[in-house]
Length: 187
Image (cartoon, rainbow, N blue to C red; front, side, top):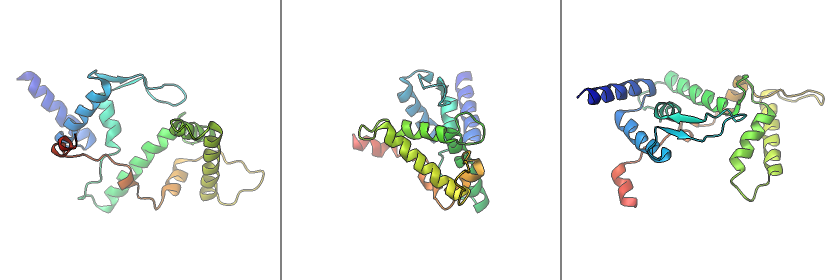
């Protein structure tokens, strides 16, 4: 009984910390176990310049996934905007690998190259060109017309908010929980 009480208390704490329901936490726990091979942590994530951890446990996994939690339809506009800002801050930190508050061209190149590395049709030089073009676009949005000798130092969080203005991140950056009975019919 003590273990069951402890587990339910832990789930209640996770509900409060992440905003997921206990059913959603259970679904995410099953997925975590699949990804980890039934181990207590997901291991061998790259570490170093990418800023990724060597391993994460279930609570870390759940905390990360909570940034992708669907918008609650009962939220007022202020709460939706706060949720949006939290999602964008999380996304910003994924790019800002050295945590200096600025996404540099090199950091952006690293992310783009990593994202496109699985595509055999895109060479590293093409990925760099894509990143360079996107950074130039970001500079024009954030700074406006730049002088020829002016150097764009990188994207700050305020710049990042400007870039994402008008893009519906709330529906594009969220976890979809599928009905498990429907899933069984698909197999």
